[in-house]
Image (cartoon, rainbow, N blue to C red; front, side, top):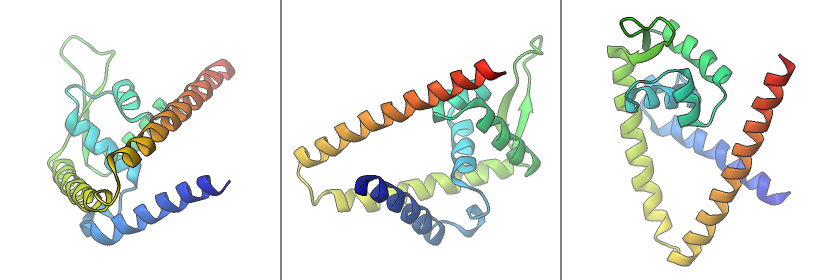
Length: 154
């Protein structure tokens, strides 16, 4: 379907533009890794479950990326006193630097694209917004179904 091809092209081109415009030190991290760093910086007590919910990813995907980020020295795990069950994450100084650079890149992206969107009426923007909300809900449902199917296979 042509619309789905356009979504793929949009994603590919956003990634290319991001790589060209962002700080070169961010280029070694993929989008999921950068967004996990952002989520850890934003959430009060991030753990695998809260990160998965916040990002709309599977816990397995979060765990895989968290391990990479820990190996890269960007995040640390910790437990609260008296609670050995839950593992939480925090940014290291290096992780905080990546967090700040990524936040700045997001501000620039929003400013750039707001200028473009001023070319469209409020009604046009609302139609696209409504479509995207429904489409994201559809994808979220498919993610939940896949997670449930994975649990049944274990």
